[in-house]
Image 1 (tube, each protein chain N blue to C red):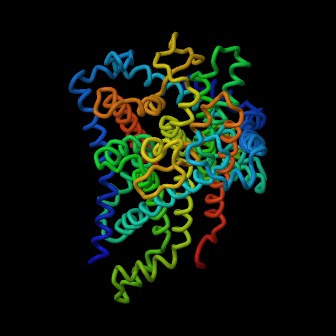
Image 2 (cartoon, rainbow over the protein chains, first blue to last red; image 1 turned 180 degrees about the vertical axis):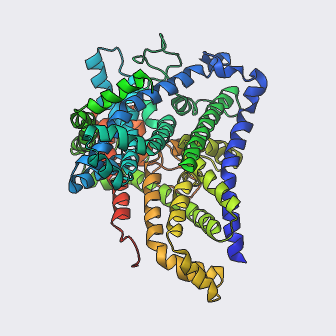
Image 3 (cartoon, chains in turn blue, brown; image 1 turned 135 degrees about the horizontal axis):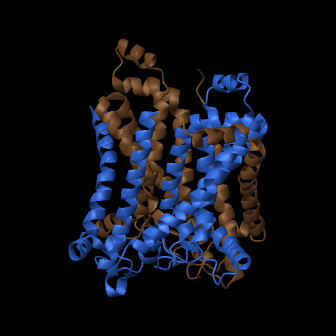
Amino acid sequence: MILRWWLSTSALLSSLTIVLVFGFLLQSSWPLIQQQGITFIIGDEWYPFESLYGMLPALVGTVWAVALALLIALPCGVAAAILCAELLPAQLRGAMRFSMELMAGVPSVVYGLLGMWVLLPLLESQLDLLTGRTLLAAGLLLALMILPTIMVLSEDAIRAVSQSQREAAKNLGIGWDAMLWRVLLPQAWPGIRVATLLATGRAMGETVAVMLVVGSIDRIPDPFYNFLQPAQTLTSRIGREMAEASIGSLHWAALLFCGLLLAIIAIGLSLLIQRKVVAA
Amino acid sequence: MSVLQQQYRNMLNRYTHGKALVLLLALPALLIPTMVLCYIFWQAAPVLDWNFLFGTADGIGFGVTEGIFSQLVGSLLLATMACLIATPFALGTALYYRTFATPWQQQLLSALFNMLQGIPPIVFGLCGLVVLVNLFSWGVSLLSGAVVLAVVVLPLLALNTLATLERIPNEYSEAGSALGLTKGAIILRLWLPRSWRQLLTGLLLAMARALSETAPIMFTATVFSGVVWPDSIFSPVTTLQTHIFYLAQEGNDPLLISIAWGSAAVLVLLVAFFALLARLLPKSGGN
């Protein structure tokens, strides 16, 4: 009886967590929606002192940072996965996987420290910028942080391709490259896709490291593809301004709305991932 | 098949420098992890000694005193409390999934946990700030931070426990109930003896995860200075994570930056210690 009570209660509470999170976020950001409607989402000006809470700069910044990170980490990570799964001898493979796991374990604040004191000076001197705090810095740092996710999961996907497929390809006399492009990658694609989606979620939600290098300036890059400018992401805005906002103010509500946006996007991504898993 | 498609396929079939391309693209992934770790320890080497590890700030210093012992203890305390809070819920939910849940509930539970895992930790930090710190008036405290961190590691622990329990062959449980064992007895006498090692592994991984999170505890549990030891679960703490975070931004004093590197090295070692322990644990209680 006690057992049943314990199990049901913990199951109920654990599944209620997510509902509670959404409930409280919505409830606390409600004053803003009540007062300004929902149009502030596409507003491009964020000046808390003038009650302007446009979300667009941070949204664009987030999309840019994540896109840059994926653009760098995806080819690199998948190539490393192929190398690991297909070309390296077993001992080296183990060593490489181990180093990737170590890298995945490095806390994000340590990446932030690295970004601030290694990456920023490097960017400043190499690209001759006024400040290294740019979207590019955030993208590079995020790429480093999601590389292990992409590499480890892609390697699993590639190794899961059955040996008979490889042997069939060899018997047909097609070369290694053709086998890679026509057999391995298409077969491993669902796994690589899930890896990419997971990495996207991780990059989007990363706070501390991004906060230290992105510059935290609420402006849409001008022109919009200029990633050598300081910008702001949803997470860095929350991290920078949460301590300044007074409880219950509109500013506070706006920051909680940023959190709500993050949570909604995260749920969307996880639904995409799960649908793929069920289909596969 | 269109001409374009045919051309594309021909191009792929004729392409022969794949191995070189793969090696070239993978080069950063091969080199950077080692470089990153070496750089951290190279920077940290000048400050790392016993005084650094076991010295404490005198309570008024602005992080300038070189000891990080109270931060170390704060981090460990938060992570341990978070795991202690999360474990009964994770274990209970996973057992519920295996014993009482209908298929529909099972689907819902695993979907919810996967969603929970995808939500950025800072969102939980925000909720903790709204609910625990302000609504419950727990203040910025050890308890608030531990509960928030517990929510962060909960999906990890629960999914790991689920995967572990699913590896136990069904015949065992069926044989158990055929012998007239109650559900409680099956759990205690059959499942736990078979799976406690993997459960411990999951717990260690959750510790490593809790130790490496900064965003959720930034607003809910930590202050920069002024606290050496927490008096109760309602007092704020200092942690290694936030220590590094604040010191990283003190750009004009090289000493502070080197303390930040030292703390980073200690934190990396701590996380790696738990991750390695999880890895080295014997895998299964004999088959």
